Length: 262
Image (tube, rainbow, N blue to C red):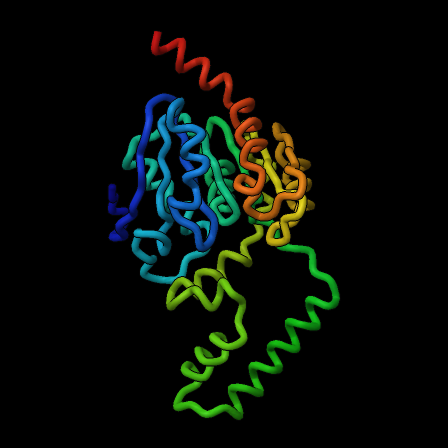
């Protein structure tokens, strides 16, 4: 299925019936990476999972976006589908979008953040050493390497020495990635009123566990579940435990739907 939001075609799936669930995947992900969660819920709920703009089969933004731009797009997506009382899931970058939507609007009934981004990482001294060394190296490379324009030299430099995500991003998505990773949503967390479940991988290196603990502290009605030995994709690494936790958190929704059907 496709929906056009402000000139951008968004691919999505819409399966099942019952309470409305919206799944937002992480950076570099797609509907496919959320299918393990879809499979848990589709027999009990209506599950909607889009490819975020720039990923999967959805079109790219026309200009570089930040997290708030993504949230505005998904809000319009929600409005077009006339969704209400949403159970909102966000993994990693999808968590950024979910935090903004939950902090700004009242249509989120329950919130599940999985290894969510949205907090600027704590930096150790060796990080700054690497950053400034990288910037110096880039300047030297651009000054002395062969190439017709600065832009082509930069492109060549980042293809060789940039991060994996940066290398895989192209054009507007590369600039978008730089914007979203610098979005700090800490001040929005106390504005979230929906009951919130935080699920984290104990060994997550991309959004470390301390971020989940901060979110638990800042979101009033929240609880943190840590999945032992799991990484950034904790819902895949510890699928059975994840499934049990989700089913427990949403059991009232399942029960209500069964009562309404009868």
